[in-house]
Image (cartoon, rainbow, N blue to C red; front, top):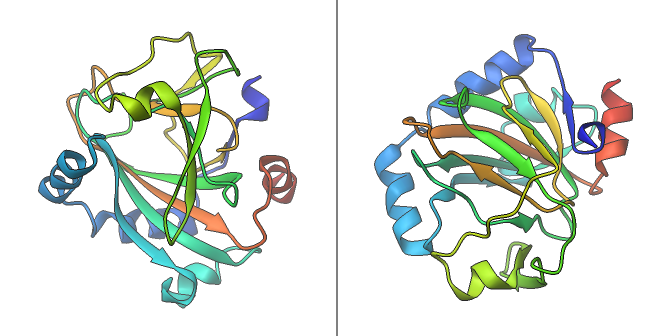
Length: 193
C-alpha cells in the first residue's frame, strides 16, 4: 500500500533551494492564529498561485507548478482526515523544519469516513462529515500507511490522509507544490522514476 501513496525523492540542489525558500515563511505565531480561526491546527500559512510562483521555481519542474503552499502543523496537533480537492490528486512535499517526528497517515475508505465537499473560490477539499460537524473531534482509526517524510516526496492526496504531529514538540513546516493538469500520483511517480 505504501507504494501507492508515497514515493521518496532524493535531496538535490533544487530541493535544498526550495527548502531554503520555504523557510522565509516560517512564522509560528501566524500559523497559530490561523489555526485558532479555522479550528484546525494543521494550516496553510502561505500560498502562491500560477505566475506568482517565482520563475526559478517554475523552471525546476518538468510540469508547470500552479500552486505553492507552506503548511504548518502545530506541536502535538492531529489534523483532520481529508482528501485534497478534486483538482489536487498529488503533490510534491519538501520538508522545511520540525518534520522528524511528524507523521502522515493514510486511511482506507470506511463507513466512518463519510465524504463531504467544502468549496471556496480557490479550491475544494473533501473532508469527513464527523470531523467537519465537530471541529474538535478526531476520529480514532487505524491507518493503513504511516510515514515520517524526511525527504522530498510525491504524495497521493486523492486518498484519505492526515498529518499526525502528536508527540512532536516542534512546529512541522512543509512546502507543497501542485501541478497544472492535475497529474495523478502514478503520473508523477513515473515522471520522477
